[in-house]
Image 1 (cartoon, rainbow, N blue to C red):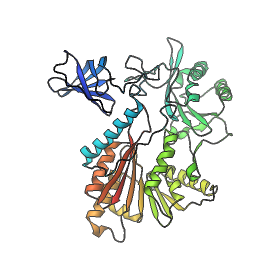
Image 2 (tube, rainbow, N blue to C red):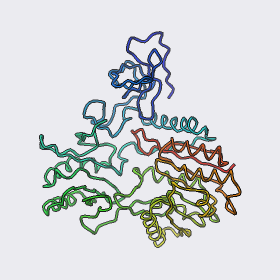
Image 3 (tube, one colour):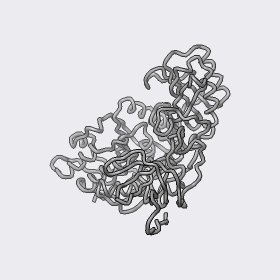
Image 4 (cartoon, rainbow, N blue to C red):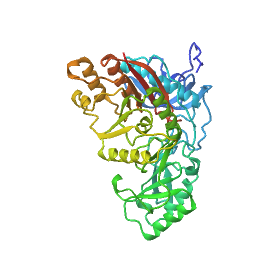
Length: 467
C-alpha cells in the first residue's frame, strides 16, 4: 500500500488518523497525548471518529462511528451479515479491506513478529500463497439454536463478541453448496423432535462428500433420523454423522457411499479422513502449501526425512514419493494408527508408477522433547515441522542444546534444512530465535500463506539452513 497520512496541522476535535492495522484487524491510532487507540472497523490511512468503549492506562478500544477520509483499500463487504452493528456475524473481520491488502498486512505481521520476538530477519521473502477469496472454508463448526420465543432456528457462526448465534441466511466463505443449505438446515432442525437439544453441526467437505456431524444431547427419534435421511436424499453428496457425546462417539448415520477424502493429485496421494479429524480448512491452499513445502524441502532419493507433528500424513506421504526413508512423528497413538492406514492404502494404490519410500510412524510427546529423545529417533538429512499454535519450542530447544553441547550427540547429526509450517507467527518467531541464535541455523526464507481470507489468522512458512 502506498498511501500516506497527509500532514494535517490540526485535526478537528475527536478525529483520529489511523496509522496501521493490528493482528486483530483493528485500526491503530494515537490521540494527541500519545495514547494508543484500537478502532474496530477502521483501516490504515483513514481519518475517522470513533466511540471509545474500553479504557486502560496506556490504551483505549473503540468502535468506528464515521470515516471522514477513506482508504483506497476499503471495499464493500460481500456478506450481508458483516459489520459492526449488533447481531453482525463474527466469522470474518477483514471483509472491508481489499484482499490484496489483507495479504500485505499479514506479511508485515510475520516480519514484525520474526524481528521483535525472535530477532530474526529472513534472507528472502517468499511470494505469498493465495487462492480463492470466497467459498474456501471446507471445515466449519456451525452453532445451532432454537429461539423458543420466536419459534425459529438459527444455524451459523456466533455474533461478533457474543455467545448468540447470528441470524445468517448465506455465508460467502463457505462453499456455495453449503451456503445454499443454511436455510434448509434451519427448516430441518426446526422440524425435528430434538430441535431444542441439537446445539451444533460440524461441517467437513471432502472432494466428493459433504459430512454434517449433528451434535445431539438426547437420543434421536425414528422420525428425526428419517428426516435427516430425507434431507441427505435432497442434497446429493451429503452424509449425516451423529455425535451423542464426545468426539469419540461420532459415527455415520448410514453406512455406504463414497468415503470422505481429499486428494493431493501432484503426488498421486488420496487422504481419507473423518469429519472430526484435523485437516486444513482450505483445500485449494493446502495443495499449493504442500507443493511449495516439498519444493523448499527438496528431498532427494538418498535422503532420510523426519516429519514432526505429522497428523494424518498430509506432508509425510508426499515426502515419501521423493525421499529414501521417512519418519512421521505425532503426539497421539490414535493419529499414528490412522497415518499408518493412510500410508498402506496409498502404498497399495500408487498412481502414475510412483512408489512410496519406507515410512514409519511413531508417537512421541513433542512438547516434552529432550536432546536424548531427539537423538533416539536418529539423524535425518531434512525436517518438516508443522506444529499446532503452541509451536515447537521443546523440539527447537533440544536441537539448540545439542548444538551447544556436542558431547551429547554421539553419532547423531542435525538436519541440514528445516521447513517450518506455522499457524501462529508469534510461536514461529520464538522458535526461529532459538534455531538462529542457539542452534546454528540461518533463516533463508519466510512468507505468508493466506489460508483464511477475510480473517486475521496468519499462516506462514519459513526455511532454516544449517550455517
